[in-house]
Length: 205
Image 1 (cartoon, one colour):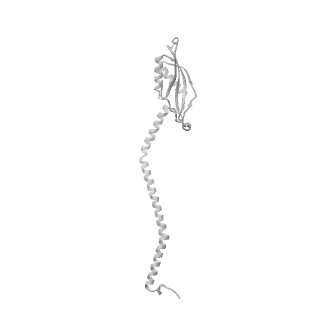
Image 2 (spheres, rainbow, N blue to C red):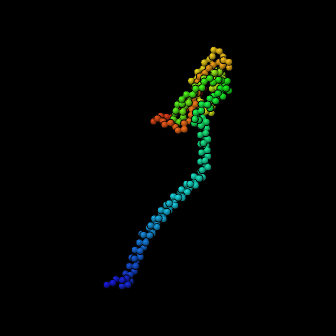
Image 3 (spheres, rainbow, N blue to C red):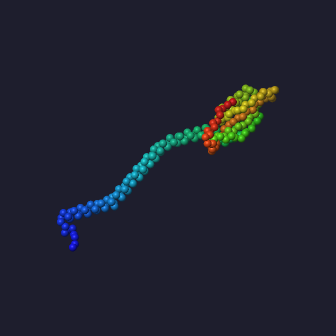
């Protein structure tokens, strides 16, 4: 016995058609529409992320002149810092500076003896023993001018002795002192656990 839709009553035929239509819609939704919707949601999320990145990039581009100005300012500060704390020690340059200031102050440098550097965390201290000859007044002028150097130079251990007889240059005293200058380290020295960085001492005369 064959079962066909035409053999069924009209209401049964309608019911069967409805069942087949609903089943077809379900299959279409499950196998086609759901994957398409999931793909669309993924693409929408990706689009939102890309738009956020574009907005961020545009905002960064607007701030580029400000960043460039900040870089220029930092480079200027670094140049000023290098003038105060040079990256390399140069005995010849410092000696020339000292000799110039001594000549301007009517002092004579009799001895210039650099000592080994003392390494700190961010800088190195470079002590130099000076032997000077002149007068008390000229010595004060010399120390004042050294204190005004762009490069930091601290004067310590000043020992002044009077001469029994003035020299041919009119010198009435001899003086020894330790002039300590500072060198900026290219790579900071590793600090000890719990230790605080040592700061350069204030200028002294």
